[in-house]
Length: 347
Image 1 (tube, rainbow, N blue to C red):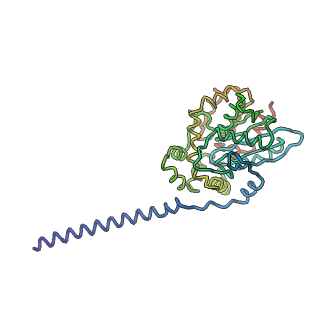
Image 2: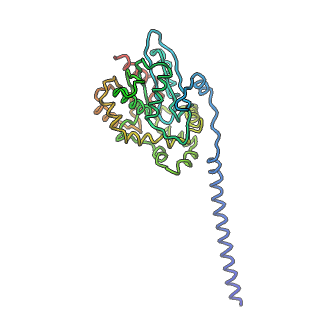
Image 3: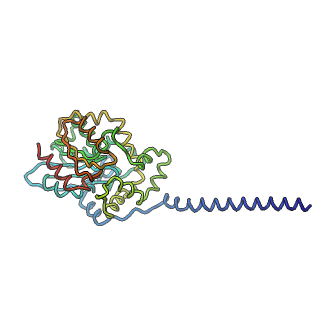
């Protein structure tokens, strides 16, 4: 009898221990899930800084296929009819050009920049199949909106904008649309060759996340962003705290973080359409220049520049100081501007 009671007591103790363990496990799960769910459901976007408010208030919008696209335009040098359009990179916006805007304004009659669809102050529709082809059509639509169809346009681009520029170059050289005639093209630190392009870890994760993408994009936060974007700036040319915050605010505006996985399909598009875009670059008779920050981990030196000079032998090249990385227009605005104006004034 005593033996049976002892066995029963041990069994009850085991059950109680199991229940306690399960309870602790669910508590831990709850502690993890509650903040994750809170993040997933709602994190208010940051307020626009005075700099961003000014940038937005001095710009305007036009409509492309039902979506509002932000652009900024200023009239500068008198006695010149030259127009330059600035095409920004991923994941930022037209604000990338703010440090060189005034010097360009002194050289060109009109300086124009836009936020691509899904970026900055432009609409960020979802679900939406973002593509380089659509972004190129948006640039053409902006040119028409501004009444510049009869003008020859200088294009200055960076990163993601480089690929949009190459699609525009292809259309220009093959007379596909007639909406935009290119006078010159200057590229900078873009992954135009898939074989020399090294996307960041977070980019690779997001573009291939599939069904997990909606969760991952909602879990993206300011600290992760700063770490990622800081890695593509040089150690001595890091953004200021305000620049980091303005970049992040531009992404979060209209929930732009939630479309990043869709936009990142441009990496796959570059691979699929390599012959079209690299072919346009290697065969064009339009004056072409490359401004390159050699510390770039995305398009590393010397691999990238050797490939560029080998394939695009007609192009001229400016390699900036060795400590300049992926965002040369922000890291070395003086060197970048001088390199660009030397190119523009050479023909």
